[in-house]
Length: 259
Ligand code: C5P
Image 1: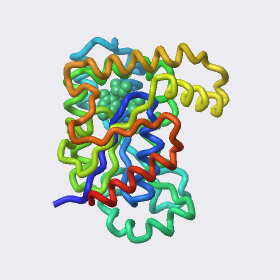
Image 2: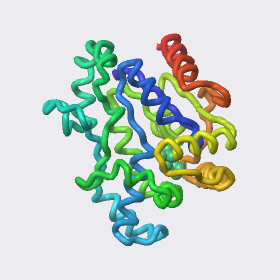
Image 3: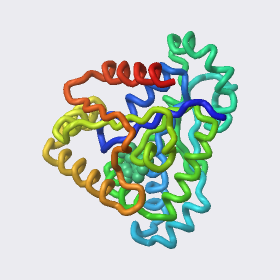
Image 4: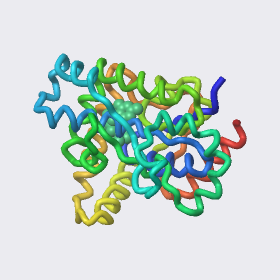
C-alpha cells in the first residue's frame, strides 16, 4: 500500500534532473536524483585516495558511508536539515499546501544539498573529474547493491519521482509511470555547452562534450549489472527541439491519465 512512483531514466545530459525536479514540484511529489548518490560516492573514493578499480576497498567504503539529502536555504528552522526520510514522512500533510507553496518558491528537495559522511558535496560532485570516473564506480556490484537498497528504502512509501539509469528496470520495476527520456548526442552536448556557459565556465569544445557524453553512455549501457536501457513498459520521450515545459506537460498528462 504505497503512493505512486514515477521512474525517469535515460542517458547522460537528457535533462532528466531538470524535468524530474519540476514534475515532482508540479505533482507535489518528492524528487530523488540517484545519479547524485553515485557521484557522491565517487567523490568520496577520490577524496580517500582509493584507486577506482580497487573494488574491495570501495565495497568497504560504501558499507560505511552515509549519503544524505538535506534541504537548504529555506531560512526556516523546521525545514532546514531535514533528511529525505523525514521529508517523506511529512509528505502527506505537505501535499495539501504544495500548490500554494509552489508560487512562493519554497524550496523542496528540488534545491536540496547532498552530504556524504556529513560533508557537503553538492557542487563538488558535478566536477569533470567525478563525471569522468562515476561510471566505473557505478558498475561495481557492491556499490549498486548498497545504493539501490537505499533508493528502495527511500521510495518504499511511494509519492516520489525518482531519476537515474535503472529505476524502471531494476530499482522500482513496478513503478506506475516509467519515462525514458532521450535526445540525440548532438542536442545533449549543445545543452551541456549552454549550461557551462551560463555557469561562467566558458566555451567548452562541443566535440569534446559529445565524446564524453558518448563514452559515459557506452559505459553505462554495456555494464553487466543493471545497464542503462529502456524498460519494456516505459514511454520513450525524444526531447530534441522540445522545450522543458513541453516535456513536463507530457509527463504530467501521462501521470494524470495513469494514476
Ligand atoms: O544522472 P547522472 O549523470 O548524475 O549520473 C551519474 C552516473 O551515475 C551515471 O553516468 C551512471 O554511471 C551512474 N548512475 C547509475 N544508475 C543510476 C543513476 C546513475 O549507474 N540509477
